[in-house]
Image (tube, rainbow, N blue to C red; front, side, top):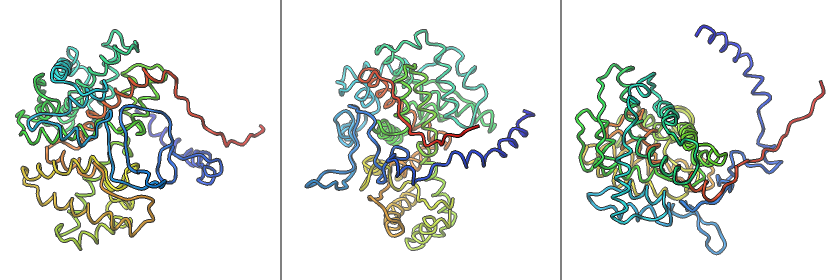
Length: 445
């Protein structure tokens, strides 16, 4: 568009004005006792609500003292470790865990079969939707493509704005079933039209699990191994829910509280998740690993690796931001339970894929990085790898393109968003309206 260059030039002249008038110093936050980003100096979130859906534990009270502990993640009263351990060897956990988060109880065999059948029935799109919506104006940003599709699906729903609980449940289940198609088809459209690659659209199999269908739809030959499907299933379980305090879940609850519809609430959550500070951490890990391989001649040489990690931490290498990505978490201190669980599955997949050398590199970084960070920085709590440290490696071994890394997160997290939307409708029924203190100085014309 012809006016863009002129508009960009105009915006550039106004940038300094915005910076000078919109900067608020840390001193003012301290003076008025307001927590920047709803986080205190220790990174603990300000309480903004109550939930019965999940719980994160990173500290425990010992003799009246708040002591860091190994991280715990609970879904509806069940420890995530128990839920993963409870999966049968040849079974899958995404569907039963989704049922648990949505309805509050673990399903029996009959309930699980019925719920899985409902998800299978929902794995379809309106007539010509793939051609007319997904393939139209494809984008490398699959999160944007999915969000557009979500909002367009609203126009096919005759009861889009009915916020009765049963209607909301119906809408959420439909979206949970549809999300894998929106993501994978969105990628295939981009890959075909923008990268000039072959186009193939495989229809999902209603008899298969969510993880199996993702691999089936993504691959030209539809083939996958039991280990691949199992590891992806566990990844989806671990990313499914993480308390009400994360940015995208809070967004879901804020939009829901206003009385808006399911499609708008989930689209808003998608817009939050796509932010690199939230859903894109595993991509930064993969970029960092690539950089390490390019600059460390022998990745099995611990001393050489330690030296280069120190340069990354000192802002002398990689993106020069002084961060070792995949290390540390806003809530967990000693360990991230998702990473602890996931690691054994990652190891199993690395053996099948003959990627043991890469796995050893990750293990070495996992050992060295916390030591270096502790030496370099004054930290309030322990530093350990988070789930994003390994998730990108898993997606790479599964031949999932990087454009789908954050959408994979969304395919799992929509379950948590849906559970929180339902809880907000049932248990809150009050618009979320936070307060901001004005520090504006009055002026005369």
